[in-house]
Length: 465
Image (cartoon, rainbow, N blue to C red; front, top):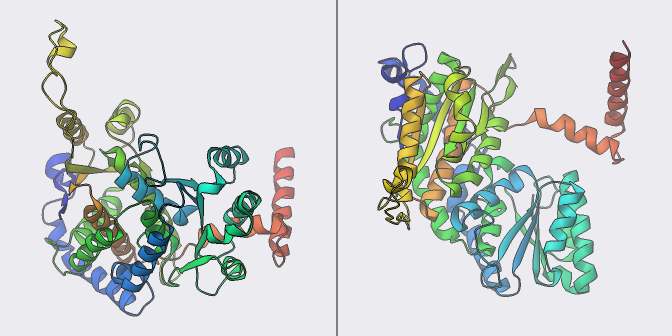
């Protein structure tokens, strides 16, 4: 199992001193990186943050496998109701292991599909319900707090749809992932006797892909979660090594820190050259944005730090975004995600058509073409002074995927230490949630409804001035 990081095109020898990491700069910051490792290890060992330990929580893994085995054959669709970290991890796993929609093939009881309801757009929800058969659907509700308005509202709609079709049997066709004994979703699950799986209190939603949040839907659609967590466990071992040459997460965090803060690259483009990693790019977008976009340092000093993550897909977005990337503002760093070995290279047939644009491609493969596309894009960016790096997965299977996800989570944690911020809170998200609860009439949130009304009056005054 290999996950490699190549920072060559981040170096000033490739992109110039104004934009790249200068000779000796990585070694000069080695002690700072090791301090970040030590700082995060202390946070982990004190139990404040739990994601490093998820891959070896065998009781949870066994309980999920047992539940999935008991349900096997009774459904052809898993309907996941959740939002943000409660949904993106499952999508990343599904897309990577079974292929992006709509090319996964026909679904059945032996090959169930995953339908994720992660938005309250009524057009989307009504269309999703119309596409599923309630008698062959297993509903999975995920919310750490147990009271996320979008999840609760959608779940009420879905449960009504389910109960109308199967009546009392609905309790056997629904499961819940939430905080143990806390929140109204937990109370509902207990009242209705839904199968329930606990999300550890010290695991935030965006770091929860290897908890029941991601593992339960993965197991239900046939992904091997034993191999997935084994790959993550192996990567965890490497992520604790005080060695920049062997610790991919620490070295990549340091390199990104130097380019971001030292060369003012305020945007990172996650650029997978694999459709199967497209879902992972969106999962990473939340991980990086929510973890590192912070107003204050650990000493409560106002810093307003953050790097904006953008998802691009190779080679597709060479034809939609690369013009901007090469000739627009030089405020970005590019992270290519590459898969070395693919199960089917897809050989291009030889046809002597007497047409130059066609004939030279015959006998080559799509695998070689997408590899050339990535390397050519990296070269073009470097020649234009745009720093970029490459993450290489030996192949895309459960072990490599688990390792890659865990590496990205550790990299994010290390970056938080380097920036001297708390990467595990999300105060910026909470005010909007409270306004929503107040405006929808939730008891105890009147203060936020009143604050919103003041905001509306301010808007009206500004519009009339």
